[in-house]
Length: 395
Image (tube, rainbow, N blue to C red):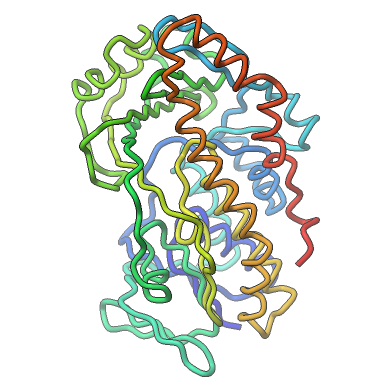
């Protein structure tokens, strides 16, 4: 079967690698002229790490990732600290795999190298999809430069603005979340030693929050700052802002938050939009994965993980129905729909949790944090994610 994946992001490459490892021949069409993932940090929970390790990527990942010892909650103005959950050896013992943080570009490169090692010609660049047409025996892919690819099955891994999704189901209707996010990567040597400890931190406050965690074995620090009530409307990861704008948005926040913003080389900003889980995302020999079908707000740290899981599960489904992609895609969708919808909904719920007005003052904040981040509530929100055994899911 001739399988074509649209988009060489994390989900598309994960699907390509998993399919190649099962003996399929795969073509990945990528509209960019050169490979190189933009973006900043990615958190990989044990569920995502387990999938990547199953695909033989443990050794290269160990060279570029950082294993955090735990996650903390800190109050926006005083810096008061509460433990969120322990990681490090605890994650390995409880879930079988570590909790890792990684620069998106590094993870992307690891996946590209693994795909090319199995099929050097798998990745086709400068290949922008113009339209697709379903035939009785497959799908015709018409590219912007006039080339036409005739394939048996198509996987749309082309992100939140997916052309494959638009072709199948029409334009989507995202809603404004009322939240904008700043992101940037910091040279950790510019920060004092106590800020370079291998922990992830969620700074929470009324109407805003900040997430920080180490990258590249502690050489870098990732910064994400989300704030409500913005008038910024561009849904893009590549729009530059200024330090002055970012500092203004977090005026009055703790001196460590201010220090991180001062140390960001280039702060980027993007508006966060909400999309409801799709009722269906497969049609015959065409399906979607990752942000193309279940884009999520970045407040549960599971967006990349869901795309990686999708790619692996797609390969499992096609291995069971190697001559019937429609059946394989229907089963893939059936077993992924509930889990991914729960992630979308849980991420949206965390927006209100991180930004609650009770966090404005120390006394109310302490009571709120003890209630919302006690051990039982944390397990309720995260253990079902981390304990997921993707090979045990029946197809």
